[in-house]
Length: 395
Image (cartoon, rainbow, N blue to C red; front, side, top):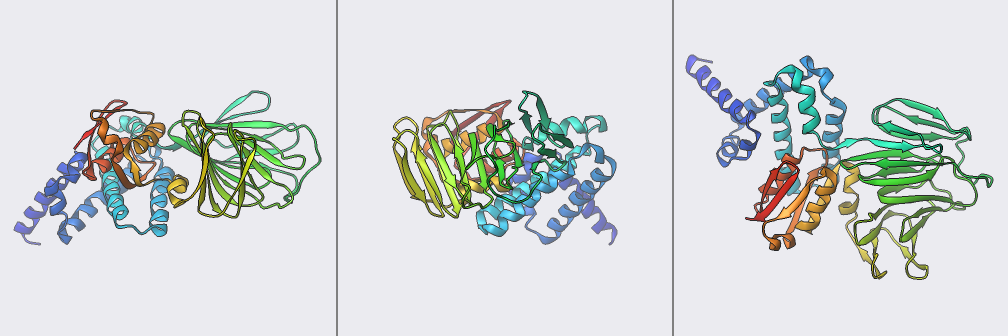
């Protein structure tokens, strides 16, 4: 490369760095047009990758690489399932912002990197386990092993999976005896994974309380839910699995389904992915309704009126893949979901924007500012954040 070429490249690198230090400028029209050139894009990726590599080498103790890997894998899984052009564009923007954030850390004092990381990643995996004796144990990446009074081994591993081990792997009813209960509490901005003693897997969403027996006894497997959870029930035809909320009961013998029942929401939902379930309306004299795959049971808690509708299940289960999935959804509903996850307060400068319809696929483990930037990119509303307050206005 001649001297003129080297000077031009140095100028381009300075141009890239000026945007790396100011992530909001990445979506500037001028910069996006500049990136359309293949050579510019290649140089941008080289600069970004070099800084990521340096960060991993020199600041490794302060970086949660496992969490970053999980975020990227969630995006890849979702891309394979739903090859939507709009999501591809959104994912590209997220990837750029993510790369820039890492590069930006390199220009911060080393002693502040841990603090910056904590405030830049809102989504996480954490929960609190309440034992039968009332003892509370904080779960995250803590390696924990304990044995309950009935002999069940409880293990929490570094991948944030809580598992209950029985002495036998055979899934069948056991003798009737007093049940020992544990409760798993998941805070805002978090989710957690549980494998119960019968082999059933449960993914718990944020602000959820889940009460369950350490070992299932008797003729049924009954658990209690406040919040939202996705169930992959271990098949046992003669041993029904029952999810009980304050309004409905969902009965299955071996299937995958999602239940959403937050106390501060008017509607409770049960969404079936595969297999079959029966839903009992506890406020309508035990009315029973059967569901088929891709069907959803919705009940209004105040009126007890219910309906069954055909749905795109990915809209209601995308969160288990680390995604927020919205398809022509009211903006107010979208912001309510984000508010629950990020613990933010949302206000509207113009009430009419609440009814705007939004379609977007967003990564749950992104920083709130990255999420809001993607909403701005839809060019429908103005979004401004002041601390924990988010103000939404007419574009």
